[in-house]
Image (cartoon, rainbow, N blue to C red; front, side, top):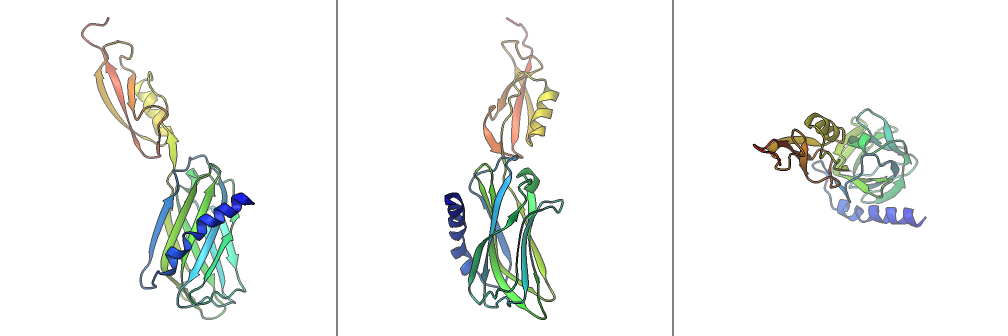
Length: 234
């Protein structure tokens, strides 16, 4: 219970940022508290909806979803029967969550907001959606200056989830093996060479930068240095 209250408190800090957003243009921002481990599972999600100067009617259904690139619904919320009055805040609402979804699966996802009005309705709004992961990190998608109506019933906000990984230890590996290991971890590879005065790493990786165990963002580049044989080996 205390953990959930802390999560709700995190979301409530973002709501005041949305209250002052106008309705003339659309924008979105995303951020993480820390980089999320690729294998961390989605543990919970919540959405807060902030109405501008045109409310959502009580008989208009609203739905918020977070989806993977393949279209798998990672988090889902729907509400009908509630009027979202002008300049009002609703939420945070806890969303139904697919805990089988990992951070890697959400590396480039999207948030979908849709309405199903009973007749005509126009709704100006902003939202903040937070994803909570099993490694304790959170990811927030915020979008403001949005509008939906009976003729334009849904919108999507793409996001890129920042994930992190520890650099694998490839010292002593061949160039091809090191490249395969690093790429499997989601890292780029730059290859350099230098004379190995010890003769212990000839045609092998004698150092890597960043060093093994360093936590970096997925997509970062690791430089490996291949040892060359000196004129004379000790």
